[in-house]
Image 1: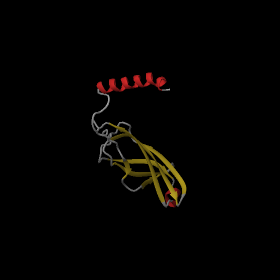
Image 2: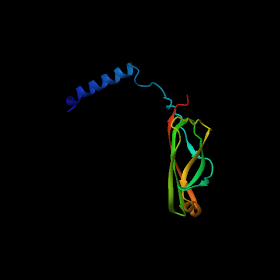
Image 3: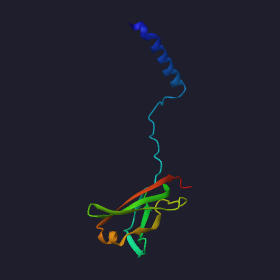
Image 4: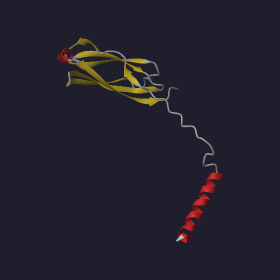
Length: 136
């Protein structure tokens, strides 16, 4: 019974010793990998509304990078609710070349929400997306 496993164990022992000699196995504690910096873009102001025309009303909101890395290709969705009922939503995006560094803010001015949705809303929610990119 032991003789069937002998060639396998011999090969395994050779591999372990060869890898140990090649420096593949650490001889002491290994530091954890350094986490990559990443952006964290959040709404940093309330939602305000401007001029209303035939297509609808302009809106304004500001987003801030509270992370440790940089972001570009900022985009998102703003939803207006009356209690738990979704009234309407609008997608927005900024120039993909805009680089938002840690601590920086970017204003969003877009269109359109209806006057009725603005009047009936009891709350709003934002969903924001971006690409994490190097800051240099």
